[in-house]
Image (cartoon, rainbow, N blue to C red; front, side, top):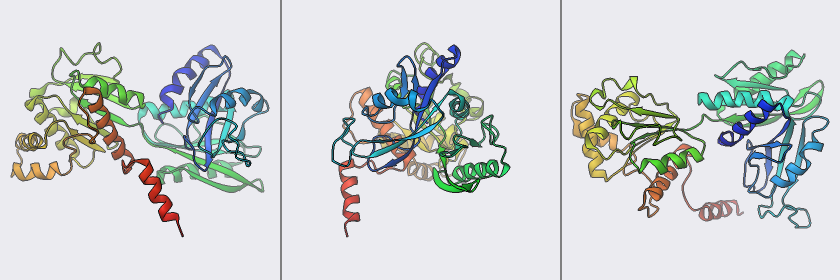
Length: 384
C-alpha cells in the first residue's frame, strides 16, 4: 500500500476543503506495465495529483479526461500504450494495456477511509468491488480494520452483500488479489477483490548517523520505521523527525523488560547496527527471545559475520541458554549477517541502499537477479 504514503496527505487536504476529486485505481493489466493492479492515483481539480499509475506516460492523459469520464458515475477505462498499428500514443515503451477504475469522492472517500485505517494499523486488508453494472463500486472489506461493509454503499440485495463479503474474505485468506465474474440480478458481473498486504515495518536499532539514510529510504517506500537506541542524546525526535517512533532503550534492562519498549510483528524487519557490542548483544537477545528468530520477516546485523557470531553467543548467555555457541550457530543461519546485498557499498547511503534491497527481496521472496536475466529465463521457459 505504498501509494497511500503520498495519496493520503492530498486526500486529507481535499476533504478538509470539501473539494471533489477523482481516484484512479489499476484494476487489470494486459501485457507489460510499469505499475500493477492495485496502484492508485488521486487527482484534484486544480491539477494536483498524488500517486502514480504508470512510469509517467499515462498520468497526464488520465488527468485530462478523468473529470468528464466520471460525470455520470464510476467507470473502468482502457488505456493502451501500444495501438494496433504500433504507435505509442502516450510516449511509453511498455506496450501494455492498463484498465483504470475512475471514481469520484462519493465512492472513493469510504474506500480511502478503510485503506487508511489498514495503513496505520499495519494490517492486511482486501476490498471486493463491483466493476460493472448498476451496482458498480459497491464494496465489502475484509480485515481487522472494520466491519465488512465499513460504511460503504450497501445494496438492498443481501445476496450481493454476502457474495462481496465472501469474496473479500477469500482474497484475505489466500493473501492474493482475485478477479472473477458472478451473476448479479441475472447478469454476469465482474468482481475484483484487491488484496493489500500489511504495511511493512522496519525497526532500526541505532540512532547513529548511518541510520539516517536507512530511515529516509524506508520512509520513501512508505514503510513504518522505528528508531531505537540506548543513547538518549542520539535517539531524539529532532534527529529523526521522519521516524514513526523514536525510543530510548534502557539497555541494562534488556532483554528482561524488552516487551515494555518494543514489540515487532511477523511482517516486520529489524536491523541491529548500534556499533556497540553490549547494545547489539542485548538487543539481539531481546529479539530472539521474543520472536524465536524465525518469526521476523528479516533480521539483519551490521558488521562482519565473526562479530555477529560472538554477539549471538553473548545473546544466548544473556538468556541463560545452554550451549550458547551451538545456539549462536543456529541463529546465525537464520540471520542476515552481514546485512545487505553485495552492491559495492562504501558510504552510509549506499550501505543503506544495499540493506533495503535485501529486505525488499526478503519481503517479496524475489530473486534479486537482474531483470534482464529473469526475463530471459522466462522467455526460454516459454519457448516451445
